[in-house]
Amino acid sequence: MLVNQQKTWSEINKKAIIYNVKTFQSLINKKTKIFAVVKSNAYGHGLVAFSKVIDKTNVYGFCVDDIKEGETLRNSGINKPVLVLGPTLPSLLKRACASNLIITISNKDALDAYLKSVNKPQFHLKIDSGMHRQGFYSENISKIINSLKKIENNFKGVYTHFCSAKDINHPTYTEFQFKEFKKVLAIFKKTGFKKIIKHAASTGAVLINKKYHLDAVRIGIGFYGLYPSKELDIQLSKLKLKPILSWHVRISELKNIKKGNYIGYDLIERASKNIRAAVLPIGYWHGFSRSLSSKGIVLVNSKRVKVLGMVSMDLIIVDVTGIKCKVSDKATIIGKQGSEIISVFDVAAQIHTSHYELITRINPLIERIVV
Image 1 (tube, rainbow, N blue to C red):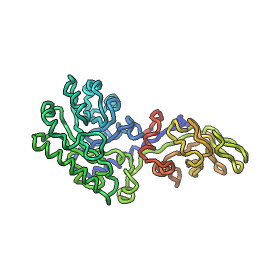
Image 2 (image 1 turned 60 degrees about the vertical axis):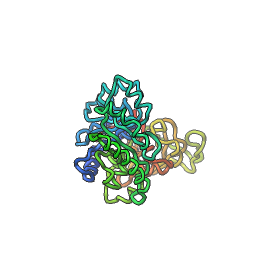
Image 3 (image 1 turned 90 degrees about the horizontal axis):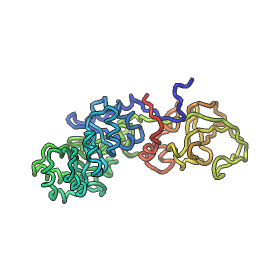
Image 4 (image 1 turned 90 degrees about the vertical axis):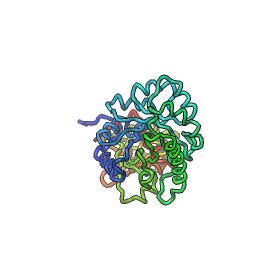
């Protein structure tokens, strides 16, 4: 009898998580606080499953995208600080207070709404140092100092985000952003804000230079055992991170396809020989990209097998000619079988996207099993 009855599931390696945390802790001053970034369903790894493991380490707190993710952490028993990185609508300030969540204020409209609200959760101020996304510009900070003084007890931190800290050899723009951020820090120091937590570095900047670490760092992709870019992967080859996710599916059907028969939707592939095919109950609804039609690779019995025809919403067909396998056998979408490995980078390269997009698109309804 199968212990795991799922058609498709992801496995999250607990030992690899702990290893990655210890690896980053060895790079960071003990006084520097570490936020684990678990936004977007923990980058597709399962918000609760991943967070409950890492909560048992000495990370300081968590970063999420929105109030709902923060509430989910609280409901799962996590009590450490939770910083909401994304925008929080004024109507949600009461819920932020109720769950003791720290919000981000990144523009004048949000600050004005906060000042008018009877519900005032703790907050961090976001600075736009050159990414031109969320955040106040440095030249506008002096204009809001008086407003911040009125809510100083709730003002707990100030941060920025680097947009290109992914290459040790080309830190020029990161340096520009860091200088812009330091202008803001100087203003706060001069005007008496001394207790706020200052942070700028996510995984890439943590790896590039310790001077970016400041009071706290935000580590996301690195805790999942992945580098922000191929450049850092190559440049820091001695720093061995361990990917924590593998993704699997069970063979649901085996069938013979005769030479000349069409396979799948829209007649895009025709058998050039007699084929033994396996049907796998996974498709683009699950996060297996339609761009992998007729070219994707999965592992069956430690062998690389090719996707045949169009990726459907819930099913794919793979060529298992000459491979010993049966219904219910495990096929691997991402991960290792025997000596063969399909990495997140491999799949992302096939469909011309980033590994970030690939893993965050794994359907959140798929069970994440901690092993």
